Image (cartoon, rainbow, N blue to C red; front, side, top):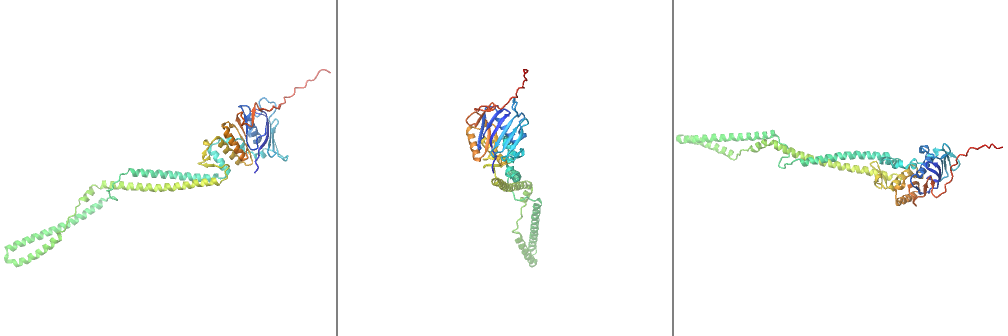
Length: 434
């Protein structure tokens, strides 16, 4: 697509300008130099007014002290002629075929930011990013991805903090390796104690029975001694009793009473034991929770990386106005640098490229105060403009060789000032001589 550029401009009596004619380079940088208050910025203001309409008309457009109204005459590279002249500085636009047109025709190829580049450069980082996303057509998609990324990031932040808290709690908890794995039930211990006591009671009954049999044997022995006459009868009784005693002794000789000391100690220390068990359970639960939240954190990190990759892929696939441009966290980036970290040359490149993309028909841009750039940076920027086929008309507080022209007291230095003002003729005096 052909880009409109300025072939020639003539300015008279605008602000500080008396009479200036300039033929800017078709491509690259045309620098208007000079000292302060000589009319450099007035040239840019005049071009903006001529092409941008009354919104750019200076509050005091006419040069102070001039009796002649402002004149602006601009010839574009396709032959389009733009004029403002006369008392009201009326606009006249004539296309190469001789047809007339107005501001609407100019608006088709004149990008407003090309006339007012500082408006873009002084906007916030987010505003610059929005302008870029608007022209490449991915603003809504990127906003959705960034919103999803923020939500995942906040969720991961919460999960990470929770995992840290669980880790901290687990480390602060004491651990008792000798404690059982589960809490001890007092009722269960009491039940076990009662069962042991019951078994011991049965043992006691058996002992008492054995004692009774022993007494019977003793009594029978005495009866045998005293009543030998009844020896045979008593002997039978003795044999029977002795037999029963033998059986009874065999049944009790291996009996062992169980001690309840351990259960009694457990009952006495149950609160302390359960405190240790609870502490161990809390520690294990906190460690388990920490592992769970760490896994969640890692999963969310993967999702965030996927969202960031989607954003990067989206921007890579977009038709960006300048290689190296990107948007991150709603901020414009160039070569991975935010605006405040960019060099003056890079800022100019970014601004010019975005302005060009906003309106591809506009092949020029106006720039003020290029004295912020050193000569090397100026040369690099000018070379880039030439490579891109762009035209830039800029001002610089300088009278050095880098300047295309020098403005001095409203004229181009070195050119003979043309007489552009015609003072009103003195009233004609009628002679009385006939």
